[in-house]
Image (cartoon, rainbow over all chains, first blue to last red; front, top):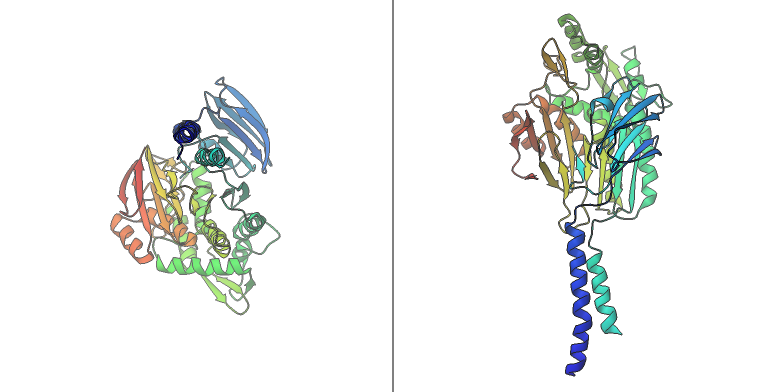
Length: 124
Length: 321
């Protein structure tokens, strides 16, 4: 093979391969830098999107199917601080900071989930 | 031209090896919780069926809320011992399995203590404990109750005053239905989470196909699994302390009291129905009995007490974070 052609081919292929491998390593090993966002659903519709990168303490009033919930957000975590539901399971669930760990109020059909990359697929 | 295109294509392929994105990723309400379905293959026409089945079957199994379907609520209202009630295919089949498991796991599982369970729920939330007499009477009613089946008429009848409760089996039964649908279409890559206590794992679209499941009850501990049902019972977040004693939500069929031996039980099986039943029953079992049940039902279990794994089937892959 023409040595000059081979050299030119390698000059083209090798940098592309190196760039692709670097990109792959970065993609596979990075921890997410994407800011976490919490979404509040009522009866499967998004009613509130909360930016968790804002670490200030604040409350959101959510109108559920059968009453009101107060969602408290602080320092990247979210919880239901008050609910009119009879069982209070959502309140007892406490604070959540992880994705794949939804807070559920079945009585009000409220589902709160933090979205973003996670180290696990589901929590039990 | 080939020399330019081929490396570019190769590079693109490498770059696409990131976290897989589901083709279908939705959740819907059912069984008093949210059911999340993630599927990495495209058969989207299945999914409306999943939603509808969850809605209908959860109504049939609900013993409190009045609805437009015939279900457990009506069965529990049957007054006369000779009164038959026609029910749906699914409810009929689920009830048959429930009765079978109540027999096979006598002393650890019973579907006939619905009234007692509800009484405990109300009392504990009020900071009170049921009297011994109330417990005894409820146990007599519950243990004296029987469900009979009439195959031809697809009907059931209940004798005595106990109430049926399918809370410990309904979600698992639903997941068995979902699995059958996936199998019909030869679909393998999915994860269905019915409120974290009942999960159906197919294969994750990664090289090893394993899903990573975090165990809340034990710090920094994960299970890696695929192609299995994963059922969990736990007293975490469901403990009441009254007069210095702790009470859970699981009634011991031997005593009528809501006190369990274990903190959390995780069971891996090839049946959602069985998994749900075993995870509840094993909350009352010592380790020897757990091993016996694993053998009898071809299941694998993890038992947790006070934040520590005290038993783990050697065929379950547990990793520390």
